[in-house]
Length: 113
Length: 109
Image 1: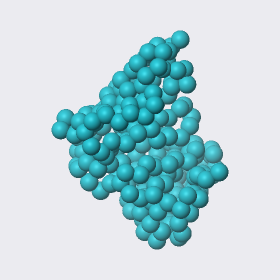
Image 2 (image 1 turned 90 degrees about the horizontal axis):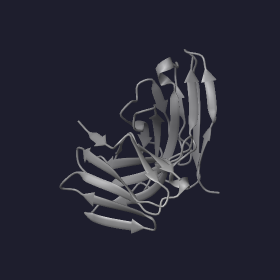
Image 3 (image 1 turned 180 degrees about the vertical axis):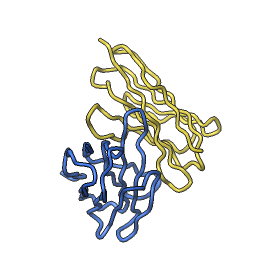
Image 4 (image 1 turned 90 degrees about the vertical axis):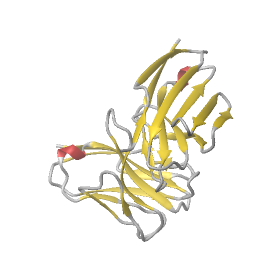
């Protein structure tokens, strides 16, 4: 079934540790996105990529990095996790045109202790 | 600044009709999306409006007024499975989505 796969599903992590959240899509979408979702707040864009080889910063990029080596994969790295990064992280992709909806993975629930 | 406003929570009765409002102030406008998100799950796409007027899709309809910075999602013949959060998002001048915090809809029998 075509879609977006995120891994891990959930993770508990000690503060200061490095962590990479994985995201893979098989829809050949050009654009990919990483969001965090916190209670009472809307989805907030962390980083995005409009096409393979390019990335951009979203609303809340500090403490996170991304890479887009190919069309399918868009990993998100927390270099040194802090408790404020406890959140649900969603990866999404879209065909890229402004009227195309974003399709979301099932999310990664991350707790930083 | 950019802002999307939606009611935090609404309650409706099974079989009834409910209207969820969304007002926005953004730097540019390239369309408005509605998504449904069940608890613990990913958001899923419901509708897209870029021109003024009503778009109907089965039991769900979405309306847009660009001059008023206003949209609503209309859900008819409510079913228990419609209990979810409904997210409004606007594509700004850079085609990035600005998201509202979502409206939690509770359906009672």
